[in-house]
Image 1 (cartoon, rainbow, N blue to C red):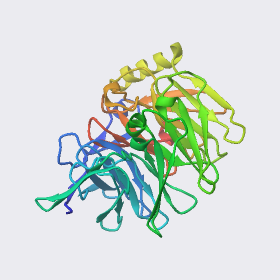
Image 2: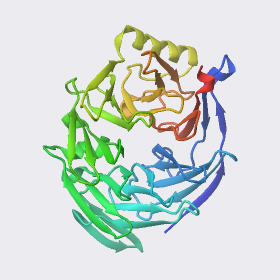
Image 3: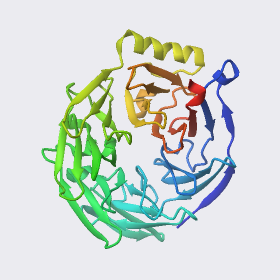
Image 4: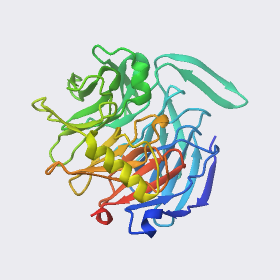
Length: 373
């Protein structure tokens, strides 16, 4: 089953832009079958269209930055809870269905979808009212395309990570050494391409970042120096292969040298960090949790590190994006035009820009690096 709707996007200029310039532009709300569709991860396809995950409404939207239009698509199974997305080598979009125990393939040319059921932990499968219903305990919530031309995905319900080869249809799974409470990993774990021929992933309940070699399948773990830091954001910097981490409860970001294992942490709380956050809200006219609780993180095209300041659970209701200069250590934060927006993901594949999903207002936002200077 497939449903689609095309809607003209409303351009929402921030209040700060009218009074002195905000680097943000918001678009939306994203069309959804629910008042809050769960806008989170955003990913560009090979044609420059931005795909927007809506995990609460089990939909995916396609946004055209040129026309400002959205087109919305339902996942094959209702209530599938689509997770994080990535493109394969042919430009197909893939995402796990967290509750449907499947991987979902999206043809980015027309939005048609197909499912590949995970071979483990199936709990229920039937046809009701001609709707495919299948659930399981794998609880995969994020996916990444590896240098081995395979899809790697979290599998927290089984305390493992998984691999799927689209060319052969073969599945494999690899237990994460020492993992307990993998269900927490399922809720908050992020998986991304790593340095060289590796994949990196967060194991927040163990206070670790994992890295798997896609050839040998060996898993290396890095324990964060700050206890109970809850590392969720993880991304590899293209410039030097370093791994950057958002330590949400530790209120720090960290840089990992994968070759040496050295970890350098940068505290964000302090008086300066907290005051910067509060003042940014007051001057920008947007309110949110002022604590610098970092989530997703990435190196921008300008060499700076960008971080969504929102613990990866909606109750924190942060509303800022942070820029960190790794050369000078300078930190600066900007509030989104929408209050308590919960920036749920960031994407830096558009040079000079940072795109993100805003969960609570059901919008997407674009941050212009040049306008922030």
